Amino acid sequence: MNLLKDLGIEKPLILAPMAGGPSTPQLVAAASNAGILGSLGCAYETPEHIHETIRKTKELTTKPFAVNLFAPQADPILSQSQIEAATTALALYRKELELTSTPSLKPPFSYDFEKQFEVVLKAAPAGFSFTFGLISKEHINACKSQRILTMGTATTLEEALLLEDLGVDAIVAQGVEAGGHRGLFSTETPDPLIGMLELAKSIVKNTKIPVIAAGGIMNGQDMRAALATGAQVAQMGTAFLLCDEAGTSAPYRQALTNSPSDATKLTRAFSGRIARGIENRFMREMENKKESILPFPAQNNFTRDIRNKSAQMGKSDFLSLWAGSNFSRIRKMPAKELIEVLWQEYLSN
Ligand SMILES: Cc1cc2nc3c(=O)[nH]c(=O)nc-3n(C[C@H](O)[C@H](O)[C@H](O)COP(=O)(O)O)c2cc1C
Image (cartoon, rainbow, N blue to C red; front, side, top):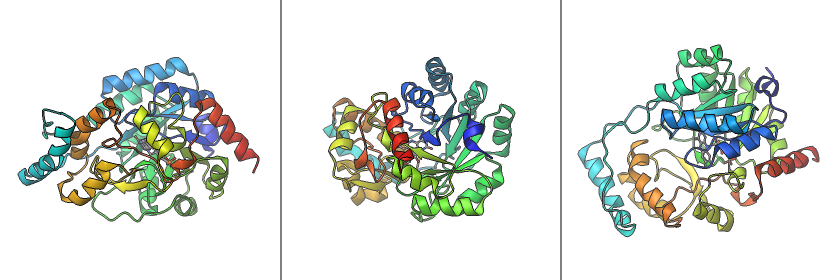
């Protein structure tokens, strides 16, 4: 299977889905218009909002793009002592940020996947990608009947084999260098922390479907190395965070520009799931309060007011500053220009 041909894109590159603000319709459309596959990260959006986001994107491009959601997650059952520990751990931050109320910890903690998926299915984008595990065979078949190409995320070969068995069209091999959440299927088992090159190579070798390499790819040379594994396409997220069209907030942009090159760490502090971001005060201090971190997605809901207020105040101390381990090679330019530069670098190697 030839992913480029099946997706209808010119260059072997995908703009990674980046939920929570960065992947705006403007960024996704600019990427798709420049000949790569833009991806909308819609996991944190209501079905109505997803409908609107896709409509706006279609207004800006007639080229193929993808939509990304989180695989359905069971809501954790929280004990009273977990709730108390989490409330106490975050109380001092709420006080500092002058937040007068504490968010409710009543489920549901995320939007109904079925309703989100229904909107995607109806809109029939060129691609549908997902992370955090498996969806059902019915979901895959529904995509096939709408000619939507499906892409599941794997952080290990075992996860990739489960995705192949499910019947996805392609596998995103997400290395440990990647910015944002790790796509691990289980939050219970230890993270084997496999690097992108090693993971992509082993998935290419042991599966029969196309592989998309993701994690730490920042320039044309990196793209070349990623594709040398046998992956058909490279996927880049962090590299696009300073693009003019990205929805990256001002304090987040400052952190990406000014932090030391080794500043990223893995943390569960913001959402309860492991994710890579630039270390800030919240991440550092929560390291000593790990037992007060709620399971995903409860922690994500419980820290939302803190993150939002931090952004409003222009402070990066309490923001999730998702970034890949190679973020310091980030460049600030419009997406179209960045894709042109990447392509020239890729060809000139
Ligand atoms: C800000 C940000 C948000 C992300 N959100 C999502 C998401 O919603 N869904 C998803 O599958 N991956 C998400 N990712 C992970 C990317 O799909 C991809 O694996 C990662 O960006 C690749 O590594 P890089 O950032 O070093 O390029 C996100 C990454 C970043 C940086």
